[in-house]
Length: 87
Image 1 (cartoon, rainbow, N blue to C red):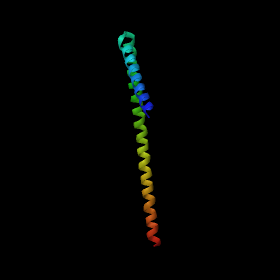
Image 2: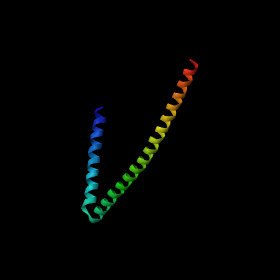
Image 3: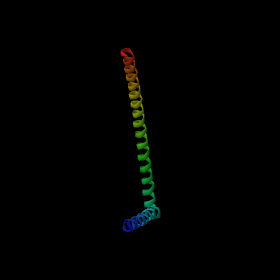
């Protein structure tokens, strides 16, 4: 258990050092700054596309859910009428 905790701490430190080194590289040179801006813009574009596609998919799911709910409600009403007729 103690080894697992130490491994997580070592990994976190290593990840922090790597992130710091990458940031230093990107911010210390003109080419690095250009690459950083390109990376940020690419991530933003991908995020925007994912949000857009998620919104489209969410609208589709909401519509399908509404239709399913209406169908089930109508079937339940029909069944209740049949039960009343035969009781």
